[in-house]
Structures are given as C-alpha cells and as structure tokens.
Amino acid sequence: MARVFNFCAGPAALPEAVLKKAAAEMQDWHGKGLSIMEMSHRSPEYVSVAQQAEQDLRDLLSIPANYKVLFMQGGASAQFSMIPMNLLRGKKSADYINSGQWSAKAIKEARQYCEVRVVASSEDENFSYAPSQADLKLNADAAYVHYTPNETIGGVEFDYIPDTGDVPLVADFSSSILSAQLDVSKFALIYAGAQKNIGPAGLCIVIVREDLLGEVLTGTPTTMNYQVTADNGSMYNTPASYSWYLAGLVFAWLKEQGGVPAMNVINLRKAKKLYDYIDGSGFYANPVKMNNRSIMNVPFTLKAAALDAQFIKEADAKGLLNLKGHRSVGGMRASIYNAVSEQAVDALIAFMQDFAKRNA
Image 1 (cartoon, rainbow, N blue to C red):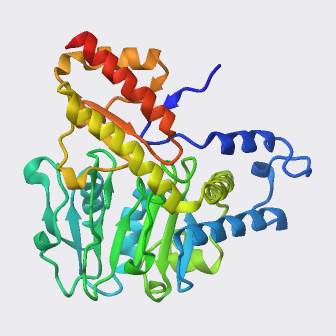
Image 2: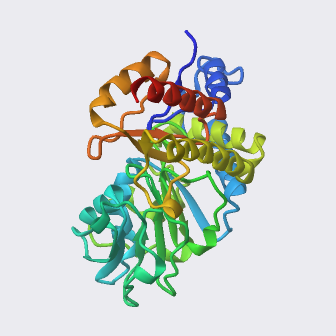
C-alpha cells in the first residue's frame, strides 16, 4: 500500500527514511541478532546510541555546556507537575502566560503546587493571538515564567521570546522544537513531547540549566527529580528506550537535511503556500492574528460548517489523513511538521482547491 500524507498533530508523521532504517534494524540491530528494543538500556551498545542521540540534539540546537539534556517519560503533560516540583526552589508563586489550551492545562496542574499568577491571557479573543511583551504583568518575585511558544490546538505561535529579566523562563516547545533556530541560552528550561517533531510518543525532552537543579519540593518522587535524572544519564530507571533510539534516528536525519536552519526554510515555504491559498480562496479562513500564525499547525474553517464531514471523508479517500480539527475548536487543522513534505502540502492545497470549486 502506498504511503498516505499524514497531517496528524501527534503522534505525527515520521521521516520515511527513518522508518525504513528502523524497519531494517527491527530484528537485527547492527548484526547483534536482536532488536534494540530487546537490549538492556545499560549495555554498551545502547548507551552509545543514547549518547549519540543527545550529542546530535546538542549540535542541532547549539545547546550550551551548562545545560543538561534529559530524556524523560510521561510526555509533556507530566512536566506540568515536574516543573513546579523542581523549579519553585523555596518560592511560593510562578507566572504563567495563557495563550491556549496547553498553557491552560499547565496552569491548572501548577496550581496544585503553588500560587499561579496569570500575567497575560488571550482568552478574550478565543485564543486567536499571543499576548505581546507589553501585555505581560510580570512579578519580580516569581520562581519562573512559563509559556507555550506554539499552541498546537489553536495554531497560535509567539513571534518573540518574552523578556523576563532575572526570572527564569520556561517554555513548552512540544509542537515547534527543531522547526526554527532557537537561542537556548534565553531559557532556563525547555521541554518538548517527542510525538510531533522528535519521534514516537513515550518520550519527553527536557533541556534545563544546571544551576536550577537540586532543590525540589518535599515529597517529589525520585523519578521526577531532574537532578536524579541528570546524575543518572536519564537512566535512573528503564527509559523509553525504543522512542529514544528513534529520536536519535530523527536527529541524524535532520543533520543530513542541513540541520534546523535548512528545515526552517522549508517549513516557512510550506506554511506560506498553505496560508496564501487559504487567505485568497474566499472559501476557507484562518482565525489567527497574522503575526501569530503557527508554521507547524494550521487551523482553518470552511465556508459552511455543514461541509466539514464531507471534507474529511473526501480528504481521507485521497490519502490526506487526520485533518479534522481538535474536538474543542472544530473545523480543520493541518499539522505540517518537519517530516511532512512539501509534496504533502501541495497535494492538500490541490484537494482544497477542487473541493472549494465543487462546493462553492
């Protein structure tokens, strides 16, 4: 069966070259006679795979030496708890920017551990924009400031990095990591669920500055202590070993493509094509403020919501899968992560043109 074009928000498309390599190594990894998912995570062979994956990620993002890279389980949602557990460091409150459903979930979880001060929100316009720097009512005594640079559900992307002064900045980069160049040194902590731009579900990457480690809330589980995770090379307990291995293949693939700068050029081109068509169609619309449109997640509505089910049915039949918008917002959404080719975007636009013509 031919491969389809997968626009899923996550678990998302993986590079075909990575899938082929993983398939070739599935039963016999490098002549060892067994799959890497059957290996001890403490074997020299697996440790070398894990270390290479970390080094490749460090290279791709130019991660400074004073940052630890942690390969953790529980997805990004587990970090909603781990962040206050590890970063409050004796303080009583943290600042959060509310720009959509994922930041709202982070806020709700953090309230179990500290006073959460929402310093800006775009809820007043149904999360169709990202609050500006001028909107932020920051507190100098906050333990940290948390925000979501790219809201996967709403397709809202910050066009700047918040200036938080001396207060540590924390960011959930789950749906935009590795899609554009990033100055890691501007952040105290970056986290990203793997299942969008990194690899399969089951893994979360945490990039954290060393000086923030070692002072956790009383009662923090050992497996959720960043210091313990760092001290044990992310192997205090058995890690998500196969997801880690596949993430390493994706990192190597990205380097082969020319790294993050090269991918960003392609991503900008893909997004521009799709937004330009939507804006000029007279049939489709995107609700997000122009300068906050995500290059990874493109939500759109049809001229009549009654056509939504027909659109999805016909798109599926054409091999254009997972275009239905999130259940909380409706409409459509095309997630065009690194592994989604320009050919896929071209095919989507061609279908949208034909559908609009037939249903205008």
